[in-house]
Image 1 (cartoon, helix red, strand yellow):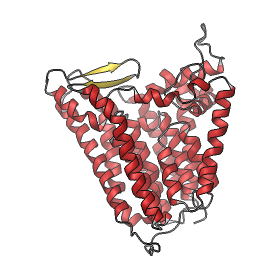
Image 2 (cartoon, one colour):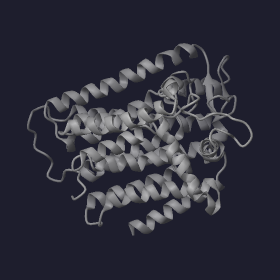
Image 3 (cartoon, one colour):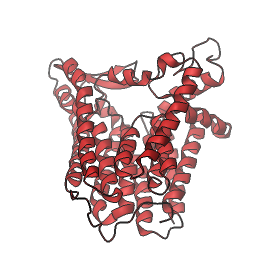
Image 4 (cartoon, rainbow, N blue to C red):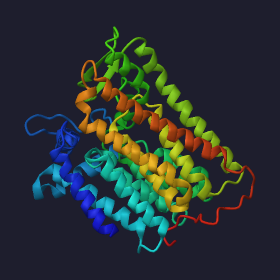
Length: 414
């Protein structure tokens, strides 16, 4: 039944990408296909030399993001590049899904599988037709292997990080929660050294970390939690507040009073929030917290800190919640069903905003009903962050703490 549901959900979500408004798969055929074809053509767009993103020009993504974009061309002969991308993501999802549910004998793993499928369905096509959709199964598989195969788990997390930065949060959580810390460090170092060596060897040393500076210079995206106040001001026609389209970032952003100061402070604030959660996790690890107690809430807290305090709030960011919530359900579904249910609510609200209700909030003066839905989604994200931090705080601070009877280590063979 799980595999039947897997097929139905992925076919249905792939189809919705073509049926829903506001181009939920636009990134795939507007930029992914373009970038990958330029690489396959040696830097030419068919007529002129435009260079290689990440090597000869600065890029918004880490360099390994090119791999899935190029791989999707291998399936484009079926029905075009966009369908090829959907097939590629579905194939990687299937591999991780098989690792998750195994032979279907573990109730916790089955619950995690059903949750993942429900999340995909409720979030809709934006979760599939974005680079994040490719990284999620890598992160989930890597997280499940951290205890039994820490080298392999770390390598998968590091590969995903060099595609999209967010999996670094789970690498940090893994370093603190896994006893074999040198394996976590070693796996990440191997991937990083090979990647940077290849980039520098190809002549891209000057742009090897260009994705970092590219993010810090961005404005306030309309979906970001920090933008909610400005969105209300724009909805109420307050002077100086409005929504506009950034042709550089291909996103809708919002402006208003003191927006430059807010933009300037958001990056340090993000670092402070993530650092605070990491310090709390480090303290609990130092006090002897086990992997099953520490890793899921720490991973969830770090990921949510990245989302809640980020000035960029793309809808696909909520896919980052999948791996920590699935691992939490696998380990202790009795304690994690409430935050998992809230995660499903976040996914549904996100799809209602994008692509279904995006026309309500991308106006110069957005509609109040659209802003209210956006504010509700952002409030749920904040509530989930608070839950994860409280969960971390409540981990017993002593060297040896008994585990819940229903909690089990996460290994491939369990």
